[in-house]
Length: 168
Image (cartoon, rainbow, N blue to C red; front, side, top):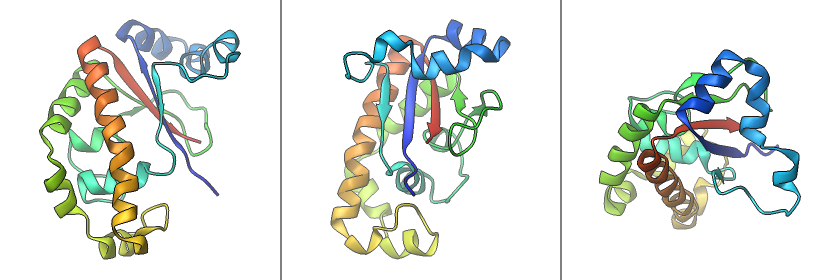
């Protein structure tokens, strides 16, 4: 069973409106039907495949929690509504949390991240997906998506946007 991580950047105003009226959440996350007709992803979205759990563990050292601001990046934030989008409700980060996470992500070096990667710890913590016996290839899988996440958070921070994350 795949668990795919997804992000969407939204304005602070859009987030506030969705917090007041939960009927807006689905459109905020998935967009309008006409947005999907061309088959191209919206520019304010990012899919990180199954790398979400590995990214979280690499950043925090904890399978499900961790200290802010790095814990904000994948599994942090506050629930947005009650609707289960596959694996629970979406979670949101405020623009201030996004800025804090983006600033910290920007300071991480590739060497630091490589040193944090200990495949045996990923196996012991049962980090999804179970690819950690693949060594360097598994790390490159995580890092390829983490680079996209960092760019996504930088853009959101620069635009003063909130970020919503969910698993489907």
